[in-house]
Image 1 (cartoon, rainbow, N blue to C red):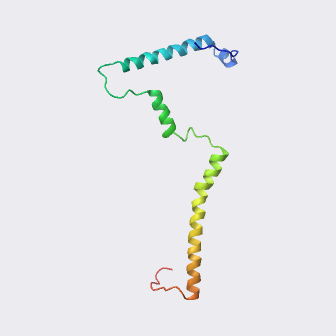
Image 2 (image 1 turned 45 degrees about the vertical axis):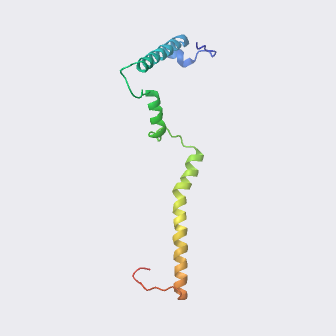
Length: 120
């Protein structure tokens, strides 16, 4: 079924796995998995959902195990780091600073009614 058009890899010769042996091993694993799937699918006593271990591993890797599989790139690390790390700090600094400056200006001009002098 699988035909190798590429020359044998040097690593294959180092560990002594020839392409036709690798293909035979792959076909054996595939036929065993297919047999197990068909046995589960045609079992009349089994009710419910059949779990696919490969799909479970893939879902776990994509959702719960992201950090070991995360590859930082300049786009993801610098842009997102600046956006989510420094961005909120600068935003709240600007909000508090402008509000404080506005209140201080009103206090100096005597236009702010400060009935409670406990804070600020």
